Length: 447
Image 1: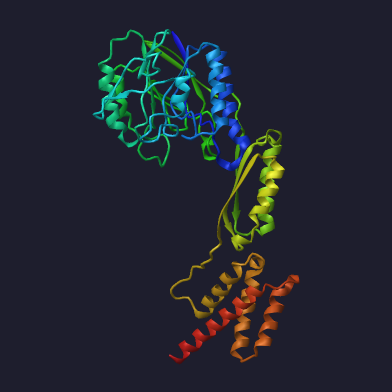
Image 2: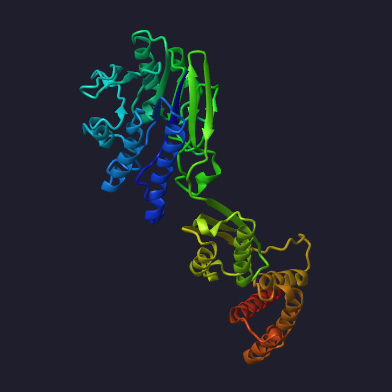
């Protein structure tokens, strides 16, 4: 029985979040995976199912990271067999890329079915002199077949690949194929995924283990299609997916796989608080701080490990949502959590009030509800909305009596200044609403 390690989507050179330390995480994770599950487990080979690199054009440091990992395997006599993914495939019209460079220097075996020039593919056996080939028969009794990145043409490519595999010299051992593409139904909002039925021609052609990559989520279908997921999470959102590497054992009649996840990875924590609409800005900030402190107390967040933390503030707020200084709050929470990267997602709506009224509602009732909605939309006064709304009806009566504007302002200030603070904007809105109501009343009277 042969043993191998199936990895995918390593993404060396990851550079999102503008953090060099985060970029190094992807190297440390891959290196640790190889030490723990390739060398310590004494596998026969390592299969890399695409996207070894984050970019087609890489920095010297990224190339050095790849070489250090692959030399680790080479020193133990463990071949690394790889294919291109969509991130590291050669640009259109070029004949080489960095995977080809590593293959030419005998640091990995890059399997590429050749093109006959007719749009069809052909599998040639691996040639150790030219370092070219579409498949390789390993000493452990496994034939490993490669593929390319086909994108939208993948369903048609599968048909051609299956035909060529069926025409290969007979093989008595197990056949493993590396294929960088996603399967339908595994994640939402993913266009172009293959259906399981689209892949079946490969099974009929004799493939025993289909090693996928591309989707950064672990899944297995019918003990035939295997995707370990990415080695590290490429985004905060991906932290909710199971992912890791597959340690597999295979012979012609049996396949056993184990998803391995116990290796060096950056801790990612996602938190959320929900505002109900009655809180002040200070209270919303206090809710956010309390959420982080609670996560630290429960050891969900380990500040000494410099985690990646996301806090999402959701719901409704009873103040102008732009009044909350999210930048200052984010900095405070980052310091509190000890996070390497702290993302604050502020996704709230302003409270919108609309009181239900019957079709036969009296004008006095309508006026009261207009004032009640107006006052309730202001967080400072909403707890006294009923009393203030009643007072504003009195303001309307003063207006109808012909009282001068200074008298009206004095009345509103006295009404609102119960706690020693007057909201000028509310005062202006109240008077404006009063004028509108009075004008509407006068028009109705004239009609």
